[in-house]
Image 1 (cartoon, rainbow, N blue to C red):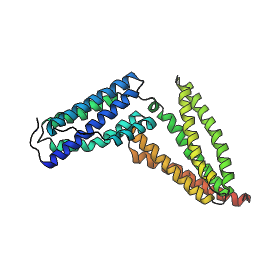
Image 2 (cartoon, one colour):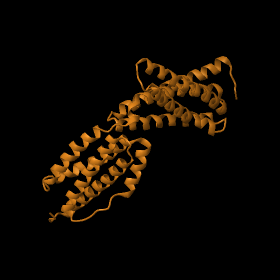
Image 3 (cartoon, helix red, strand yellow):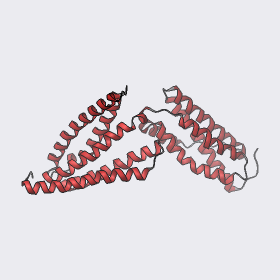
Image 4 (cartoon, one colour):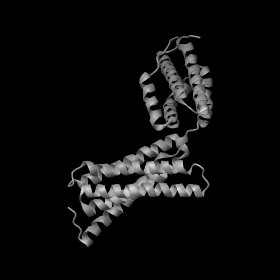
Length: 294
């Protein structure tokens, strides 16, 4: 089927050909790691579909194209850390550019229509079949993460200016954070049990882990910096809070196809609003009570 094509069209075909073989290998590797038979079947089918698209473009270019090994390595690592659902949807976002290229050459290459149909319908259907445990407990993770961000950010902000001593703030934060982690996990367990959730224990574990990891991240600047640098520690803590909110909401927006900026804005306003209020309370309490821990 090799035919005369313009240099620009040939460049697009070779790029799409490389994307398809890269996707085929990536999905095949992910499929091989799956314990769940449904997920294994889904990714194997996607891998075969991508390979078929590669062969379609190869018939036009008459060339074999090497996959993008760096991209395969990167996404293999990402899938292990952040899960298969996030990875595949993130990868497919990159292929949106490929779909635009396909539509641009549709008039010249009729086969592009079938590939577009495959990309938009077949893979979308397969992706909707993916079943990943961690996404079943997003609500529990949000509960732990959000509560830790709001509660502990406010507590640390107040303590920072009431105590003006990084070690005392860190100690207070650790004690408060660990106690709150256990309390939140236990409360979530009891609530889930009351609702008849048979996975109440697992749900509470996700909540507790999310809370505890947030506590560690928030307290860390106060442990690493000298006592007198409490203002700097506070600024770094706020930056960490914003980064946590940014990262988590981006993950959820990709994995569950939810709007990013609205959720991100809400969490930032709530967390930093509580921190600002507690900041003022801490200064007022120090002045009123005459506390001097420095």
